[in-house]
Image (cartoon, rainbow, N blue to C red; front, top):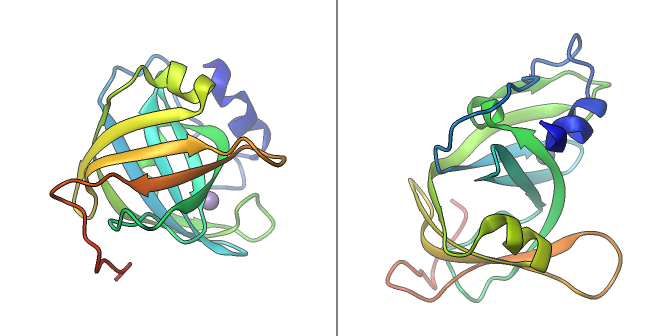
Length: 165
Ligand code: MN
């Protein structure tokens, strides 16, 4: 898959336990949030788009409080197999540190996700263990880089008292 070229370029698969990734994965409609204790702790938010996991690094992690607008840095697509990855990326490798699954579940896009990536507006519904209901990713138009905001939509699942736990 073309979109995994950058992922593979960054990694040496004889030195990291991360998956290389396969081809032509059938649509499963999943998302995963991985807590990545690398040089800086962050949460990797990944949603299935076009047979890969479109990915954002979220320093503060997602929130169920609609008032929390989380900075989400768009990073390289990851292979579908990455949704199951937990473990230690050894020192000296890209992203060295521990990876654990913080949340996972079903991802339902409300717009065409490929168009959403291109236009910078993604609306979707999550049904996981920690995250539920409507969310949005909106690309920031100002500044350099590929920075977005991830936030909860107002619905019956919104929790103004929510903490990361
Ligand atoms: Mn990461």
